[in-house]
Length: 299
Image (cartoon, rainbow, N blue to C red):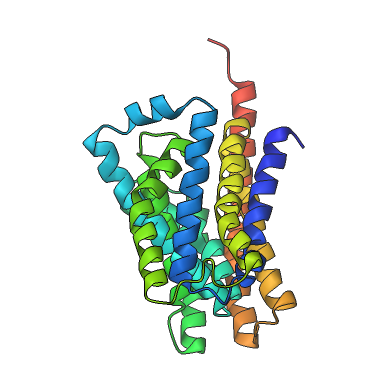
């Protein structure tokens, strides 16, 4: 594998093992964890831009009101996604979070059709329909909508939709997003501390290091992912993205012994079958396009 593939595998593996990290902080309320994740991420990204001498270009790039409006929406969406994920992991719903990220690519394709008026191929429609059946089955058998999975899938799907037309590169974009959320997050953490509910500096040095480290474990895979997308085809990124929810699923079932009942087996199998169709179809189309390109006459 080349460098780009290793970087992508590393980023998705990082994200896959996230539940283990957040479980170490399960005694910290989810809104405070979100505040620390945003706050320390922004500080690290700010320092990264300074050290790499990109801060001046970043400041110039964010002066446009359109840029600020776009990234305000992106910041709200990623904030919803992060809060839901952290809360769900520590509430014992790791398996359902993995379902959200399994179906996210299909949700993104569907959004492209509905909102961007993109056209998709027949077998892509088949995959989306089968995945919808899987989610419907889980809803009926479980007796309630799998809202955690759907919130994660749709918040990240809309986030990707916003970022598709956003003008900044990955690093500048996530810096601006965390920057927009920085002051509200800081305000919330200060309020929690004043009200006597604050965890930082009150729960032991291990917890405090882990809370500060939330910024590091957020930014490192983001930087790896940003580098990977420049070095390997987007189709390869799409295939590798299933590493993260697969690891999360295995951690939830094998490490934390979350219930994986027969109805979940059936529902997840339907969704996995849809993903296999989706992935194989994309791979075949890509291979066909490469063959056509090689056989095309040189102008």
